[in-house]
Image (cartoon, helix red, strand yellow):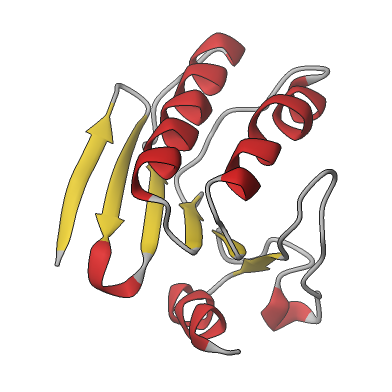
Length: 134
């Protein structure tokens, strides 16, 4: 069973409770770095409440180009909270043609301060299958 856990003008957060997945679906809307931060803060808040083993970000419609230091902010202020919430795997579903996806020969990695592996996929089903692998 899936239900919308939260949403704002830039994204929808869906809890796939049966599968242990909390998903952030970016919407194709214009946003500022402040909106980007607010949305990731909302996502991590929902992860802390739901404590899912798996996080999925659907970035197939993501249009924002985060400004300088946004990824460092995410690495320092958001990523450790995912780990504290019990996340064991983190996947990105990316648009077709993005380099370094698992389908294009990329590898899972422990990014930044993460205590869990992250992988990028061009096919949603491949991300779901990766979650189920030991």
